[in-house]
Image (cartoon, rainbow over all chains, first blue to last red; front, side, top):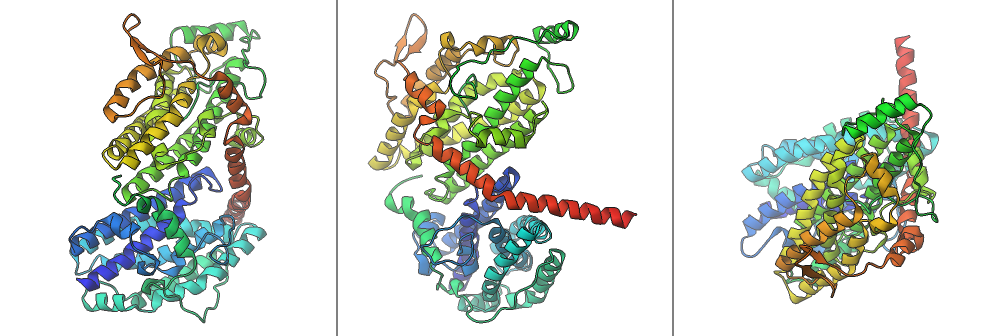
Length: 260
Length: 337
């Protein structure tokens, strides 16, 4: 059970944290249609997170609920990829402030959706029937997210000189974080051994193909990456997740006995 | 959501812009009047008096701006929504408001004004939007109260617009009203749940009701006696029910809902009048209303600056999309040649 719980939390936290980030655009998009589109992506992700947390709550039993998992775990207990918790702008320290930057949002959604389109498809065959069902639903959603982010990646890359430079900078900033996709965590290894999870390294060639084709169409350069491999999925995060959770959890924690 | 009754002029100062109907072409004017008198619909391709067109562009664009600006006060609580279910509901709701803005801009575009022109009006401060969004959302209960009262007031105003004489606006309003009605019930349900919770939660709901009640009554616009635009709007079938009638209907509908919820509406003069078969209510602070309409409310500057910032910072994205579309088209034409 523990292997399943840890793995499901990794998937759920990914969805929640990115859903929380994408919702930051609600009311602030570069054009009304994109405001609506990003809210939709966010809603899909939060919906996925809820299904996964509900499954975890069932497995854990007792008084565990989706909201306890989302609101009453601390930073080090979150298992999302570090990529997904980063703010929508270039590299800055945790307490630095900057405007939302659309290129960062699009590049991140693209890199993650390209992975999840493959991962959810593979998880449709998970030994855990509930996870397989969530994967089938999520796959339909992530295919739209991939199409949306890929279309914009191409528009921005093959748009104006300014947009090309900006989106290349976003790609240069974020690409190194994708190294974390391919480094197994103990939870992933246990889930793979139990037949619940998927070995993501088997998806890498397909991910590379999706990414390379899109970057080529967008006239963008794939950055060479090396060095530090982030460890968010093992609970070791960037400075940014603490702020994200402090805000997200503040009201629920201020009223621990509240009913909503 | 939206809106005060859109009888307010766009430029501050004068309170009315009642334009006389065009008399340029008496035959066309007569045909237009006959259609209006027969309760028929005017469509984009039909002849219409310039004043009718201008009034509609002003009203529909103000309505669209209200939807877009209205995303900000509620959007303020998305990141802090206290449960995942409420977070999803709130995102979906704010997204619906964006959708309403989109169909309303589209409806207004059928009158020959582009979205860019309308947005320019908003960003330059020339165009108005509903003043209700110039108040801050201070607690989570504001989200529920906005759904219950602000959307409730908006529905009262908007349901008659489904019968508006201008076809595209009337049709847009059918869908808008369905969604608003859903938002209103969601808001009320969220409050009902909070009222079963802790003492702090109940106090939070009462505090939000106290802050929003009078603002919601003002949303229906100035009293009929001070609202000269209304007569022309009624004549044209753009406005169907007067401000005061709508306000009364709202008060009568809301009092029993407040009782069920267990909150007090902050008006010592609010009581049932057996003779009128309506609730009497106290005096609305119209001076405060007009100050806020004219730019001097608590959040006017913040709301407008936030819209302008999003628009300006999105400029490079919109330019990229246009540049890419042009490049793609040029390549396709080259391939076809």
